[in-house]
Length: 430
Image (cartoon, rainbow, N blue to C red; front, top):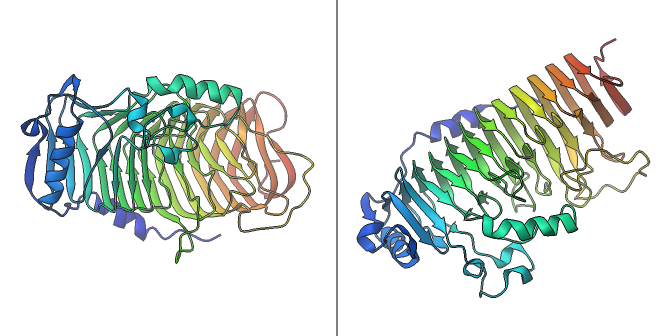
C-alpha cells in the first residue's frame, strides 16, 4: 500500500498563519448607509461597501453589531469580510430574490438557476472572519424540499447555497457561524489554498440537503477545529468532472480536530468522476451522525479515490461507523445487490483503493459498517488497524481484496462479527 506524503499537510496548515495580500483600508457598512435593524433591506449599502473595497485594491469590510437583511451579495478580490460579535448577515426571506430572472422558484430546473447568498468568482485573497453569523433564513425553503424528498427519495429540490466561491485562491473562513442555509452552507469550487478554521455550521437535523462544507475540485484545503451539525453531509468532498491537465480534480485535503454532530458524516462523493486523492482526517469526533467515515459513489458517477488516511477517531451512536460503497443511491441505502453481473469498466466506474483507518473506536446503533466494491471494480488495499466497533450487527466486506485487519475487534449483539462475500481478507480473528 502506498503511503501518503504529509508535506502538503504541513504546507496547508502553515497557510493559516499567512497574511492575506491586498489593501489595508477599513470600510464600515454603516458609513455606506446600512441600517442593521433586521427590517430594512441593506443590500444596496452592503454591496456598495464591498464594491468600494474591491475598487480600492482590497481591505476590510466591517459589520458592527446588528442584523443586516440582504439579497445576494458579491465579494471581490483582496477583501476581508469582518463580522463582529453580535453582527448577523441575514438572507432575505423572499425566494424570488435568489432566482436568476425572478419568478416561481418551484419551477427551477437545477441549482444553477439560483444565486448564492454570498459569492465570489476569480477573486483571490478573500477572508470571512469574526465572531458574527451568516444566516440563510432556510426555514422558508425547507418544507417544500422535504415534501419533494418524501415524494421521491434521494431527490434534491433546487435551492440556493449560502456561500459559494468559484476559481478563487487563498480563501479563508475563520471564527464565524454559518446557520440555516437553504441548501449547502459553504461550497468552494475549483479553488486552491482554502483554510477553514474554528467555525460552526448549524441547521436542523430535518433540513434536507443542508451540507456543511462541500469542497468541489479543490486542492490544498485545510479544515480545522470546526463543529458541524446539519441535516446532510457534515463534509462532502466532491469531484464531479475531469479537470483539464490534472489527474485528480480534488486533492491534498486535511480535516483535523473537528466535531460532527447530526448529519450524514464525513463523505467523499457521491460525485468522484474527476478523482480524489490525499485526504487526511485526524483527531475528529462523531456523535450521533447518520454515518461516520463515508466514501460513496456508483456506476456513472465514479472515478478514482485513493490515498485516504483516517486516524485517531472516536464515534458515538453513529449508524454505521464505516460506509465505503460503490452502490450509493440515497442516504438510506446501506446494502448491496447480492446478484450483480459484471459490467464493462468505463471512465465513470468507481475505483476505491489505498485506504487506511487507524485508532478508531466506534459505537453504532446499527451495523458496524460495510466495505463494498463492484464485481468489476473491487475495493483494494484497505487497512483497519487498532479499530474497535460495538454494534448491533457486524462489518460487511464484499467485492474487495487486499483487506488487512490488524487488531480489529467487532462486538455485536447478533450474528457474525464479519460478513465476508467475495472478499480477500487477512487477519480475521479466530
